[in-house]
Image (cartoon, rainbow, N blue to C red):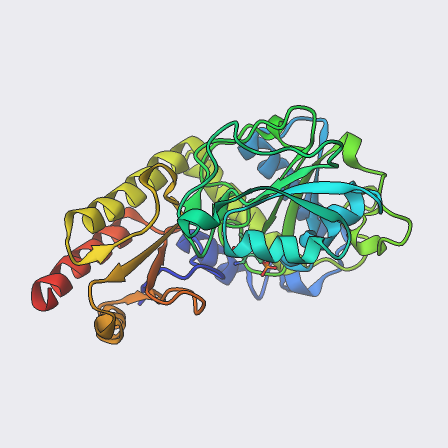
Length: 358
Ligand code: PMP
């Protein structure tokens, strides 16, 4: 029996994708699994190329952008971005909207002079900067932001306008949740383990003109130009993860693409936030204009009830609702593969729990 899994990542995957992977596990294309063949073999190269083509179609990626499949998670990109995009004496702008922005900034400081274009500390990271309010520093190599803070549950409802300064986004927890105008960005990266597939692979979408400027001492595995030239096969890629990502992209296309995901995600998040706001028992601290569709943190009126809430939710088939260890409370992640029925079941459980304990 499958449960409703609200994990923030690695996270729930679409059931038809898991079923196909199961059916193909022992005999994919002739008595072997996809994990047991060379990444350079014709059948695997076809998997890799189709995954890229499907992702390009889903996001309408312009021809002037490269799609890379890299390793090291989003965390490796925290270093790869400055190494590739900023010369050693350059400055770069960073927006701080919470936990993941801070992690990114800490790592970037090893390589580049970081200027803070906005910091939402005053609201305790429950807001995003007003449109047009970012402080751009002169000559910044790029501006980096985190469109969706996975822990804080804060999401930009707009794409910042940085003029000619390349905009770089960590979309780990929001990619593929709705349509996106890729042409607004210089570079997008996302770890796979939320909306793309299993952990182990990182999608990077980078504009052609940003390739080729990596510092001389950049490890080749983090050099976008080198990775692009090698077709993301500079070394052995995580072949199973790539295959799984490809199955997820096919599933997304069958389900109606990103416009349909937007409709579903808005409905799911809307239902949960409405239930939280309608109760005097649950609360979410994030400003209404920038609440995340993907990660919904919430608290109970009395913290001493947290343990009972989690245990009873688990017993009801609603799992992984504990908030991040850094913040406590609860968090429901509602990625593409979470069904409306799952959110309905959660809301029903929350009402019932409040009735008994409120
Ligand atoms: N950025 C964001 C927004 C994330 O949510 C995460 C992981 N939860 C990371 C970066 C780190 O990703 P990884 O573990 O793939 O390095």
